[in-house]
Length: 259
Image (cartoon, rainbow, N blue to C red; front, side, top):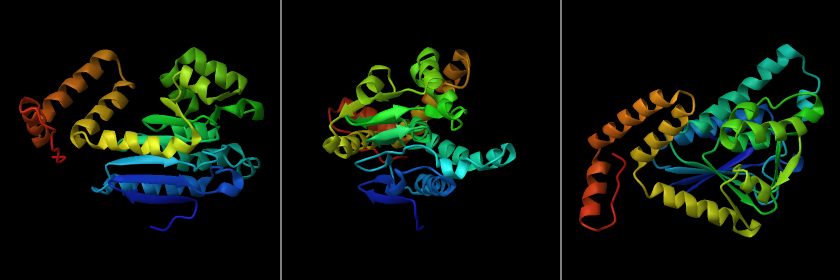
């Protein structure tokens, strides 16, 4: 598929999606969301892709939604306009493969919300994060009020959303918004290193582990534990489980095949 607002490259089982609207700081609009959704769907179905990295490039991740597109909308039009972002974000969040966001520069508003849909966030030391929608008389409408509290806790999420403040990479690391901070020139190398570590493991086990975490966050503890138990037992029907345990007993590296 040909994309206009993103680039997709695949190398050694790792797909890199790069937001590609540098002239507007990778502002997010309906076309971007539609192309992200298409890419997520295609990569999810591509058996040759084991992991995904989402980035905006070396200078900026995404500076937020395209305000010019939003400013003149009425309430009915907003409901319709939000749909592409929800579809894209849900597809990325529930992709049955590990997704890492590599974030440099601004990750504001919808850009910050986009990063929240990924499994792991790695930030360059020049990254800045924030949900400044409150300053526009609105609230985060791309999942920020739901995903952020689940990640960093309700109190800190409310502070960031109520104030609209922008925080730097070190503060984002301190509060658990990102997993790691590296120098800007090492951002993609670190993201690829982590992705390679993830995809070296059993693909089915990783897929079910992600599902257990994502599903468990939406239900009570007992329901989540029951789901985990079923997934754990299911893995004993896979060749990867046999290979992994046999390799452990034989003191060698396992050769997982994803089946």
